[in-house]
Length: 103
Image 1 (spheres, rainbow, N blue to C red):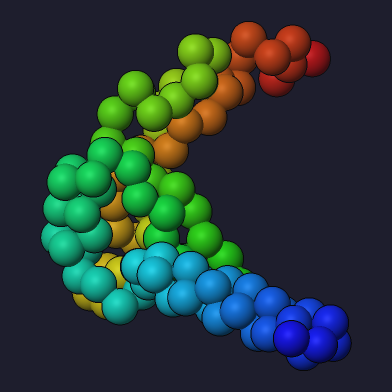
Image 2: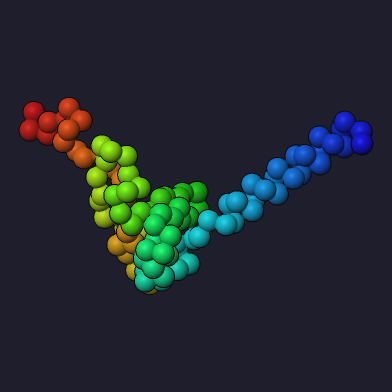
């Protein structure tokens, strides 16, 4: 195969794989709140599409967090609830990062 054709075929395949991966991510906005919650319970951690250009990881428990992170309720827009408490997110706590809000 000619080098130019091989390069074009490789680019086409890469583009197809990237499109397939993006389509594979479940869209939180198309699910009900209960469906989204159940998906996180079943899989432990799910990366949902949350907007046209945004996504976020939702986790079911602390085992998905780094040692210095804690669980915080994470809300997301579902088909039936604009602020559904889908699951949790791992975040560093506000205190313990050298930040003192009273100063």
